[in-house]
Length: 320
Image (tube, rainbow, N blue to C red; front, top):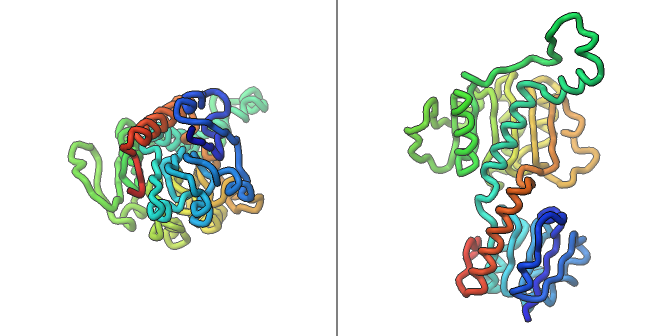
């Protein structure tokens, strides 16, 4: 019977979903987390390895002599040396497009917080601010209406387009940069732009690009120097797309007005990460994908990946 090992099950399923369906495919060994010094020991006899953020290097894959399939619990696949896996004849399948609307939802949660300060005002009311106010209304930060503002979307795949759909409902102007410009003539107030043009003209800049050699540290001091001083920068893509010190410096100096990120270069962050103490910076712990319904959808795609592999026709493979 095949041996199936899950290296980091907890974040995908902290107990509100089920792994029982895996039993039809083999004997399953589930680890909530796997420290780096335990990876090789846990996967060396596995026929199938499931991982989210636990890395599988070429050295580790070399020792996985029985492995026939690597199943990811994520869309991104840089955690696995997929090219080396291909050389060993091991298909690697990811989970595509399962979190599109969930990520777009978090983008607008960030935007709403930056523009309306819901948390700030609610906390102040609870602390007596409204009770002690001589007026029926007050605000603790400038309040911003989205209608007529310009959102700049860097990366215009499924998530970028979902963000544009919501922005359209707010009657925002939309600028986008993409490596592949598609026909968007059905969108109102939409324009393709150069990166410099997008930075100069956007009130909100949101990142939806993959992590590549070209996009690593893309949001650096030069990038931020081209933004409006009133601009907000949002990152729900990949942490290393942002030079975190440059962003913190821009926030602390007032070069830009605010930022919100769901991803960081190192997760969990080190205590000296400059964004943790930066002005007007909202940070969430990589939660865009973590809603119950979103994880249910992820599990559904994983089931499809397993069925296809055991039927001899792997799907969603990133290396074959």
